[in-house]
Image (cartoon, rainbow, N blue to C red):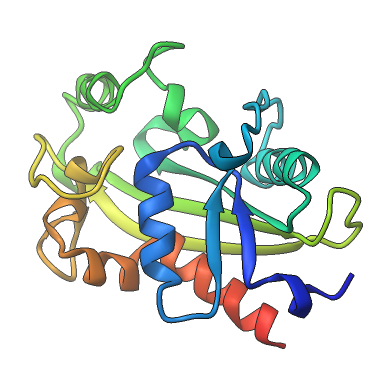
Length: 202
């Protein structure tokens, strides 16, 4: 199956409304229509991988299987150096099975309470996978990294997840205070998507 024939309509293996919106904004200038997996009643799959890339492949394969379309999936998370890379692949469920953005952010702040400003380095990681079909033996794998620091309290109303706590040194504000188009230029997901678009164009 030639990806060039199919990549104008791709199922996104996510039910996260913030992520769907962000990816559609990033792809708005390209001839690509991203359809959320909820349009096909794709059941969520258990993320049993031990790395971002394993989880992304599991999610993409599941979405491609149920939709009959090529699929993209990302597994993203926050790595905090003072916590040995946690929350990492557990970023979405950091505070437990019923985790919300609020409870995750609260837990992160509590764990970093005694950590001084110069030791609060962190980065967002995004591993993005494109599968032409469920049995695709050579998925396209792209990675984006965004360096920053963890603030002492939330700032800003935009974005989702850990954005209010993620300080962007070059812009001297949190990720949640950036305009969406600026965030898309800088973010881990934006970088990974631009790499994917370049590979699809090839």
